[in-house]
Length: 73
Image (cartoon, rainbow, N blue to C red; front, side, top):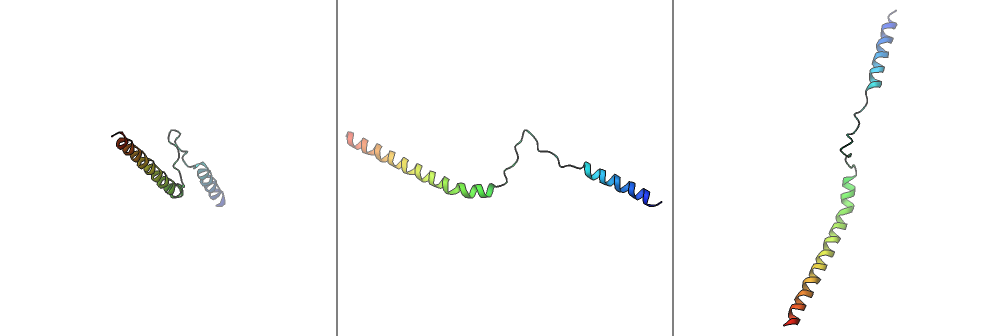
């Protein structure tokens, strides 16, 4: 007769564990990206290349402006 209460206790514990679920993510906040290190490692050279290209374009614009200013004299 001792197995009856232990079966009941086991059933209650199993039902309690089955009811435990992780909290769902908040809908107004998007989930955090998980591959940020990989994405950052891939984006770093691209950002450096964009910065170098912008520097070249700025230098060319300054050179053209200086050439135009000296040609007008």
